Image 1 (cartoon, one colour):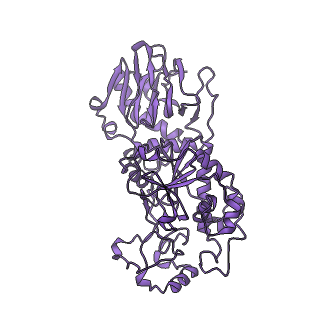
Image 2: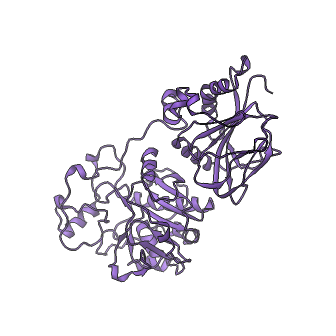
Image 3: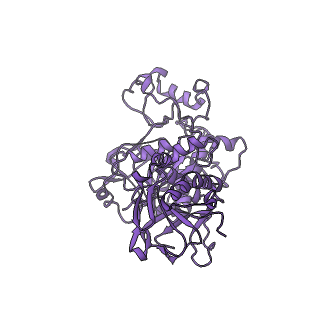
Amino acid sequence: MKLNHILIININNPYDSLLHRLESIKNIPSTNFNVLDSINGWELEKGKPSPYAFKVADWWKLPDHEFRFYNRDMTPGEVGCALSHYDAVKVAYDAGHKNVLILEEDFVPVDFPRPDMFRELPSDWSMVYLGRHANWDESKELKVGNHLTRVGYSYNNHAYILSRKGMEEVLESGWLNNLIPTDEFYPALHGTTDRMDAQKIFHNAKFKAYAFRKNYFDQTSNPKTNSLTEFAPIKDLNENKKPDWLDDFQAQRKVKPSDEVIDNKPPWIKTTGKSHKAKKETNIVKTAIVKKDKITIKDDSNWDAWCERYINPAILNKEYDLVIDEPAPHVYVFPFFNKRFCKELIQLGEKQEWTTGRHKFYPTTDNLLEVLGMKDIYNRLINDHVRPLAINRYQLEGDTWNHLRDESFIIKYPHDAQAHLSLHHDHSNITTLVNLNPGEFEGGGTYFPKYKCNVNPKEYGVMTLHPGNITHKHGARAVTSGTRYVVVSFIKGASHT
């Protein structure tokens, strides 16, 4: 199985932190991912509209049950978490992904299964956990091959993969009409929960859930201390008071505050044996509240800081001779943006409905940067950083190059839709094209037939600069696997109409 896409449900982690953690996984076959803003249940409670119509299951609360998790109402955080997971599944399904790895923002990568391990998955699989808490004894679960098990009753949904079949089964389950916590929904769907009422409503015999016998992802949030499903987001951790049900649970277990178990096990699960005493305070994750980086791709209020964050230092320092290559006459290739910019721009593009008919003769599946709120920023960087480079390489003269105009847009070439673009000239003086996701597709490239040259950089953010009219007819070679993303600019001087 080839991992198709990754979606990260995020409420308060900086983009850099998420990207760094993904890139730290040596064996992960792809880091093609999008970050989804979490649906914050605590804000819904205050009256913020929900993107989905939903109804919390009126049968969820069992007042006389021995576990306080069941005899209390869902917390607003649990409502938001459930809606966020539903949202991730719907986004992945609507995007046409064959499978998707869904991660919660507090994921901690340990490793990633080898490709051969996925071959053990039966063809009818719906879901595979890459990290979980097994509520059943291992002897009750069915081993599948050397690395997988058909899961029993399991909690924790910080890292799991759904097949397209699994996505359909989630979306058709009626979850929004009987919303229950995510921890209970998936076991109910594959028929292993202790809640027979939930199983009666959700169980689908075709939904097949598996797990690797090793946890490949851990998580940092702890439901007893800092989980935003249990606790409202706060500014001062000292103001955070545990829910009443949580204190009652500790009383049932006869656990003193100083002896709380420090693990990722939900607090409503029975424990046996001696509990591990808390680690030293310096090792305990105290809060999931992280200060966000104030600089974003759409905020150029501090232009110097924006450029340092997203543009290659060699371009900022005008070290052109060091970094520019010329694979064909007057075709220049050089590192311009970093990976951070590429990923954030793709995310912006995917938030808008793609257009397919803007160009009469050579239409592309694209979005104007103007629609994404990036028009002025991109024109500024073209004038500040592309213009002097173009003047240097092409030895341009005269006032016509004092200020450049541009039509800039992000294009995607899915292998199973519009995978190529026929040979054509651009209506521009010069054109730039930036490869946004190399390594995440096969095929592709910008082909110049006159020079028998296909430019297809293998690094993120590499820009290609070439003349627009007459001399440099070109086309986009077909993408054979995956989806290729590029951003193109038709750039004109003052005299160009």
